[in-house]
Image 1 (cartoon, chains in turn cyan, orange):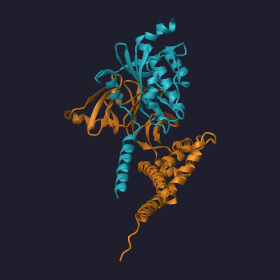
Image 2 (tube, chains in turn red, purple; image 1 turned 90 degrees about the horizontal axis):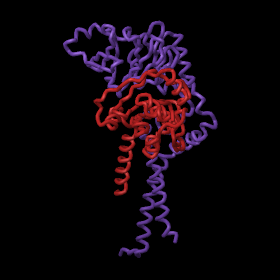
Image 3 (spheres, helix red, strand yellow; image 1 turned 90 degrees about the vertical axis):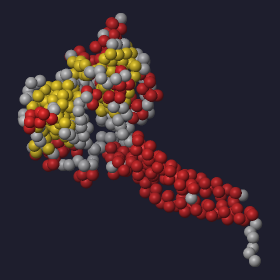
Image 4 (cartoon, one colour; image 1 turned 45 degrees about the vertical axis):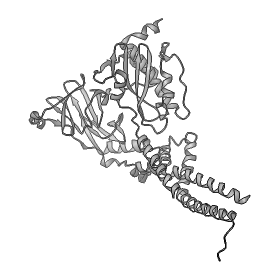
Length: 181
Length: 267
């Protein structure tokens, strides 16, 4: 029967799509850096966190930040950061590019939680483009709209964006002047 | 002489045949999908109230379910010794004694102290965790830092860190992030590498880790989510649920088609 054949083809197509969507890695770090800088040949640099940094990190993440050394990639005023934060129970890996004192893009590289992966979509991540730090608490200068059912992931993305902006100020010195104004 | 049925009756018979064919398929698919409808409805109902009923905080302790999740009880745990401490992987987490220190994707592949740099290095398949000698996390290094992988073991050669990824061995400098390949001509040196070795986890630690994992590992919400998504029976469970979703669509369509076909007859 013709309609049975059509159904079978449809089932095969849907299954093939679900195979392709099953993985939680959306972009490899190399691909992220290639997209950010045009090549991956650029070596990373290291930023050692001092007490003030750790305190700032604690203020942003509301817990002690795990780690003393953060690697980053830099090309002039542009820096790229690969950072993890826990959404509900598992770490989410984000890539954040900061140019000057503004976010150029936020990308979800790997999502390991069972819910909340909607934050990977451009309709959400594009909200971060152009945001800067405002105030001593390292808040963003504009609010980010949440997603129903992905509240904790949204918060993780916001925290990582704030931390990347803060770290960027440490290596480029851009926003420090802005915060001092 | 054969009687010729009027055109109206012929059309009715054709519709009737089509409807009964749809009914057969509708019934077969409905029967196949019934169990899954119940599973999805019940698990969905409880998931909808997971927070209200604290299902995300209650853990399962059934040994059958933990076995199903592949959580081996304490006696089968293996650890990498570090001085008087032990590095052990339970579930997806790495523990230093009973302290959870990192999320480990894949297997734990080694842990050792670097005497020159005064660091501790713990390796998973695709990541290295660098710790101070006081066991505080310095950083995690992975594909973004060009760490070779997947790793299968780590060791020391003349107090330098060596990574093994399949047949390739790399001399690692974790400060400069340099991973230089040990050439084939240096095969002799490879024999003198001291690879990190596992040891049986001490019973007391095994028991503590077992309790920790049973206590915090699998929540009722996690179990319900896995049932709802089909993950409870592994990767194929997801595709089975996908298949069921398609069946539900077909049921809706065939049901609608049957109703549509019967409308003219009723008129």
